Amino acid sequence: MRDKEREPDMAGSLTASLEKPLADRVALVAGATRGAGRGIAVELGAAGATVYVTGRSTRARRSEYDRPETIEDTADLVTEAGGHGIAVPADHLDAAQVAALVDRVAREQARLDVLVNDIWGGENLFEWDSPVWEHDLDKGLRLLRLAVETHAVTSHHALPLLLRRPGGLVVEVTDGTDDYNRDHYRNSFFYDLAKTSVLRMAFALGHELGPRGATAVALTPGWLRSEMMLDHFGVREDNWRDALDRVPHFAISETPRYAGRAVTALAADPDVTRFNGRSLSSGGLAREYGFTDLDGSRPDAWRYIVEVQDADGPADVTGYR
Image (cartoon, rainbow, N blue to C red; front, top):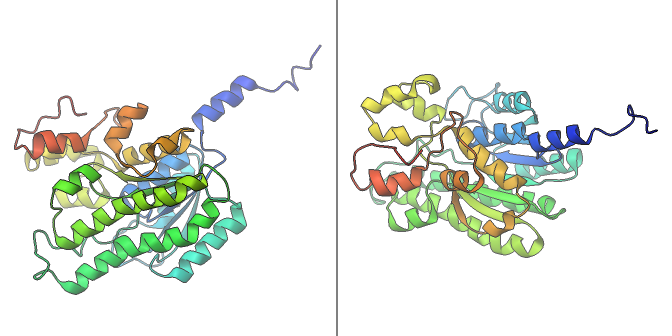
């Protein structure tokens, strides 16, 4: 008779694999201090991944944003969620720092399965509805460096490691779908160019990575209840609906963890190559995979923005979340 004490717990192993589908994966979330980057890192951790989180804001030194969120805090949240968070300070405009970061991942893990390019840093640099000849030139060019050059530098150094194993995933995080940004002016010349460039990066990377066994996509959250957005409206996550009297369409907003669940679903999908080179949204992927936001709702912000907000309809999220 078989010794039951030595018998493998197949049911337990299956349950663990379903609960932690990324337990053997290594991810790098570049730009994970706050917002979507933090939400993505935490959800990757909740799926069991080892997650390297980078940014310029540390407990020892803040970036020019001068905000309290740090990469160490993000790493702690990743670990608390069930993964292994590792904070690495890095300025992704500095190629030497990025090369050292990737060398560290290679030395410690010998693999990279998921690369998320969420570096932004331009929140205080663009001027709403300001034409290029009136926009501060130094700020505009700085925005492009932070939002575009950083992604290129990171991909240049990180992709050889990601390509060591088949099945790697690259996620370029932007604002707006390809369809939406193609037909709409996005705030200013520099902002528009930055967000559209990231979409095109995913398309180009799809062509370069696809034949080599990896997948690249662009992902946009909807109206994000980031730390900065909540502060802007003078609310917290637990009372965010108090802002609806002033900004009714904010009712379609979503937490940063929603985008994180989108990335996790992609990373766990054995058939993710069907999305290679495409522009995706958190709401669209929620319909595809069946996940929800933290409150159990399923906001579809970009469909709402087109069909309700831009159409000057009354703020009514019925059928959109």
